[in-house]
Image 1 (cartoon, rainbow, N blue to C red):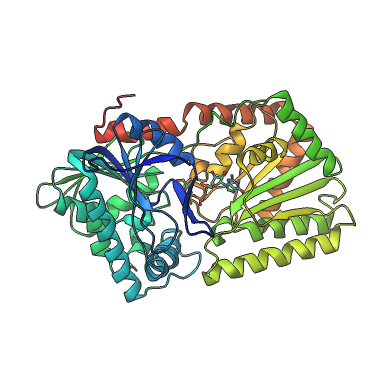
Image 2: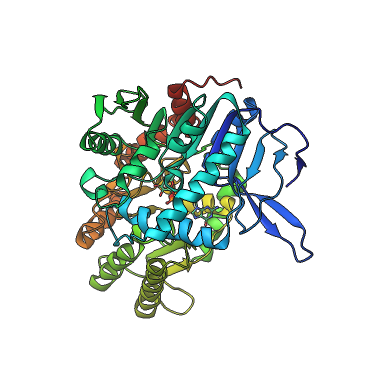
Length: 483
Ligand code: GDG
C-alpha cells in the first residue's frame, strides 16, 4: 500500500474516526522495513468517502506491538494515525478487559466474564492514550466518531480535554439489560465514559432501551424513547450536556457482492461439481467464537444424519471458521469442540473422497467467499447472541436470483430486519433441526414461496446498505457530507 509520509500539519482534521484497529495492517519484513496492507471491511468502505471529503483522519492501532510509525496519508486522502500498544497493553486491554470481560458480559454471559482489576486499569490507560491522540489531531470544532466496546471511555475523556468537539459513539456489539450490566465493578465509570458522547448509536432499539434503563437506574434524567435512525431519546446530564441515544442497524457494502458475471457463475458450478454435485450445499461462515453457535449447528446436523432426516449422499456442509482471539481459553476450547465434532461427523457419515463437512480454519479471500455464498442452498447463521451479523446480510445480497434460504438465529440483531429468514432458537437443538429441515424441504416443495422470502430480504439489504447506515448516523450527529 502506498501513502505519503506526513510532513504537513496533522492537527487540522475536521472529521476523525477512532477505532481499536487502523484500516490497514502493519507487517515488519525480514529486513526490518515496514509494510502496510489494506484490510478493508465494511466500516472502512463506508467511512472512506466521508473521511476523504472531510480531510479526515483515522486513529487506531496498527496491529503490531510497540510500533507506531509516523502518520501518513493514503491515496484517498485519509490520514492514518497509528497508536502504540505494548504487548502488555494488548494482553490486558484487548484480550483481557475487552474480550474476556466486556465481550461475554455484553453477549448475555454465554461464558462467565472475568473481572480483573489490573485489566481495568490498563483499559482506562489505553483509552486515555487513544483520546490524547485524537485530541492532538482534531481541528477546532471537529467531529469525532468513536467505534466500539474497546473505546467506551474515550468520549468522556475527550469531552474533558476538548469540549469544542462533537463526539459520536457506535457500539458494534449488543448492549445487555441493566440487570446484567450491573455486575460490572466499574459500571458507573464506564457508563459515564460513554456519556461524554453527543450521540450514542446501537444496532437495535432494544439495545438502546437497555442503555436508557441503565441511565435511569443511575439516577439520570431520560427524555423520550429509543427509535430507529431518529434521535428520539436524550439523557440530560447534570452539567447541561445532552446525550442523544438511537438505533442505527449496520449493514454491508453491496456493490462488490450483488452482480455475478457468467464467469462467477461458472466458478459456482465448478465448486459444486468438485464437491460431487450434492443436492444441497449448506454453509456456515463465522469467526471462531463461542457466541456464534458453530458446535450447536454441527450437533443438529449430526443428529439429522443419525436419524436419516438428511442423507450424507445428498448434502454437503461447508464451515469456514476464521481464527480469532486464539490466546483466550474459551476460544481455544470452542475450536477444540468444533474440530472434534467435524472429525466425528466425517468419521461416522463420510466416505473416502466425500466428507460431509468441509471445514476451513482460516480466512478465505472475499471474492471466493461470495462464490460460496452464492453456491449455498442454505446458510446457517446460529449465534447465541450477535450485535447484527453481517454474514447473514452478505448471503442475502449474493442471492439476487432469489435462490437459497437463510436459517437465522432469533438472537442475531439481523433477525429484526430479515423477518423472512427461517428463524431458529440456537439454544434448542431440536428447533435448529426442525428449522434446517423446513428450509431444505421448502426449497423442494415451495420454490416460489422461498424465492418470495429471499426477494424481500434482498430488497431490504440492498436498500439499507452500509452507506445508509453511516449517513443516517452522521446526519443525526449533524455532520454534513461534502462528497
Ligand atoms: C461484530 C459484531 C456486527 C468472515 N470470514 C471471512 C470473512 N469474514 C467477514 C464476513 C463479515 C465479517 O467478517 C464478520 O462480521 P459479523 O457481523 O458476521 O461478525 P463479527 O466479526 O462478530 O462483527 C457483529 C459487526 O461487528 C459489525 O457491526 O454485525 O454482530 O459481533 O463481513 O464476511 N471475510 C473474508 N474471509 C473470511 O474467511 N474475506
